[in-house]
Image: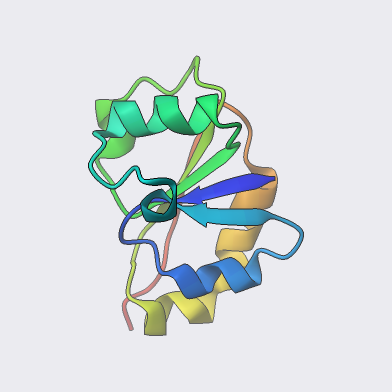
Length: 108
């Protein structure tokens, strides 16, 4: 799958997503886009999953008819996130267009 990391998603997480192609919004030149614009640009570029730390995105955007899935990280702090990277991998692998899944990451 072609996976897009939004700003705030720790780049080292990409190493855990073996078999997927991971790019960042910054690499794509999309740092200044609003959430809706980012989703549209990502879909147009063929991205299948957006991984974000923005917990409000699913409430601000209607994802039902989108061609992209959204995975929301419950905690973006890499020391905590790396311990639960397997949860993110499961969520990305299970992602279906138009869906949103939040991955709970304990803070301790």
